[in-house]
Image (cartoon, rainbow, N blue to C red):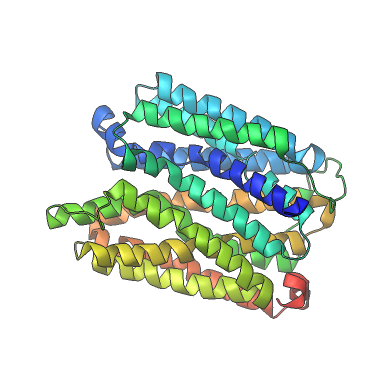
Length: 402
């Protein structure tokens, strides 16, 4: 194994473990809703809080150019470790919604140090095949995001123990980063503090259109990940029980989200061979179609619902890494980390709206059409990436494959 691929494996492992913090509260939401008498607003708040924290963390990081001024490995190690502490405090001491929201917010702030710097580190190891490399990294992130659902899917642990298991996994990820991860030979130039660069990287039309495509993708992605477990549980409930090929809703949710890692890998291969814009537009077309179609299976045969959910889970994330890869190819080299962090911050701000929207739509029209509102994002994202493809600077993408 070459040093680059060894680092890819180690960094992917670290991301898989660290991102178990993200949906740890979502995985135990039924228990929390029962114990704390949470309504739809409180349940949505727990999921939105970590998004809000991540936004604040990435925005602050971008404004001070944190991933470009300091060691990305150091930023990752400190961020993950502090996230473990916040999630552990939730598990050990939270007993009502208010403190839980604050701790989930703090967890999100800390996770801002786990995700964008990892993409920058990976970009220093790969010039050729960068789309595949970052695709594999995001695939690991996807499995990590699904991992908390696996714990209640396989065990009967109480919710506090489930959160502590997620924290232990993330702490192991911080150890991997500190002991084994390093920058590669294709390092980006060091940057000085310049608050203007957080916005300046998007003044050019190319990076701006890549960001717009990313926004369309993000409108769909995290709302799907946040609410697919509730959809699958409600679909079985309306049928009077059953299972998804022997899996309970938590197990099925893990399968749906985790299989997205295959989409990330395939998306990286296709993107490097046939272009970033090609892959992102095709992926958004399929995922948008699934967002509309899955509601039509609600309350229907569980295998049909699961099949559509799996296809959606694979396609909804297949393009994610390629928006980030495009930013690394289109942005000024000295501020790639800042560009990635700014893009991520804006994208996650949008996820708060779509996550909040889904339970509201469910209340008014039911699950049959709730997810269809997410198809708006991919439709607009396809338009943005189509325009990017026509620009001369798109020749920088995927070695000229656009």
